[in-house]
Image (cartoon, rainbow, N blue to C red; front, side, top):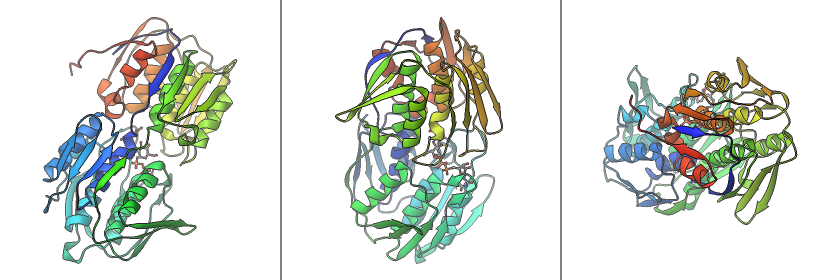
Length: 421
Ligand SMILES: CC(=O)N[C@H]1[C@@H](OP(=O)(O)OP(=O)(O)OC[C@H]2O[C@@H](n3ccc(=O)[nH]c3=O)[C@H](O)[C@@H]2O)O[C@H](CO)[C@@H](O)[C@@H]1O
Ligand SMILES: C=C(OP(=O)(O)O)C(=O)O
């Protein structure tokens, strides 16, 4: 993609349905005994991969650009496609849904962004706690429950890096198929989990949360029907930071201030970003000046790790030394080296990313290694003088359906060419 920077971005931006929310709902929809329509699903590569994965099991799956429809099969093939399953992160969650539904499953090791090793031991612990025999090999995982079905279980989905989002959903889906009560301790409370819990609760699964964790009482029949995919808080944050970094302002449509985690709002407010809530919309603009901050990523409602690379790009425009402490992953710094090519004074040591600002960025030729690194490089290119080239567009397309078109309507000059490798 070629990006000519140096223009303030201003206007309205419609936020897509949440990438990570949709991915988990696609897995939850596999449990249903009737057709499910997920409204406002994002038009991203990961959605296309999920259509392919569901169809491979014999389940009807289609996406018309807005609605993702799942029509159950009486006897789904309990196999997550070995190659396609390596392209996305929610492979083990899809595996859990197939296991709960059919009594066995085979799935490859999950894919997704590879900025550091990403374990799935808590997913496997949930499957074992639910009564499955689990075998792990180089190719992937085989789990077997047999006709006995899911038994009530207790599982801890906490990790040294905080509660696992994906493993909480894996455990929820397993528990949803057991008519007795299971307990998930140290659960994630990210919106992805809350939305899956709401989807299940609408269909008769009892989910309640107290100090011990999530208590889930499942049902023998999970109904169908429509369910909306909540707006993408990470896309909203990305566009807000792009607009502010260029000195512009944006009205985000389809999200409200309440949809943004308080940790994100406080970090951006400390930088000098101003928020004005509207009717199902949020106006975002820079204050008089941008200031350096010291901040930490953390589980919801903390500063989301998926916004930290974009925040580093924004902080190149803030006066002083900023530090972002990554706590959800041991390391997430695939954006740091390519940001330096723009003249940004950015460094990383273990989980700490530091940024010296404010810098005049100049155009660069760089490669994105993953979704949010790509978003951070795009923000830098929008700020920089001259025309930059960013390769690795497929990473961006995995998570952002209409970002480039949407930024163009705000005034960005962006052109794309097919990748040659
Ligand atoms: C598709 C999707 O929704 N992806 C999101 C999801 O990923 P994902 O669900 O994979 O992230 P987790 O919450 O599971 O991972 C958080 C941390 O826990 C560790 N861990 C996780 C599982 C496990 O069994 N054992 C273990 O040790 C991971 O290595 C990581 O350091 O949540 C992450 C954290 O908010 C986001 O960055 C991802 O964008
Ligand atoms: C890390 C991310 O995604 P995934 O878990 O799909 O790799 C992300 O969305 O920033």
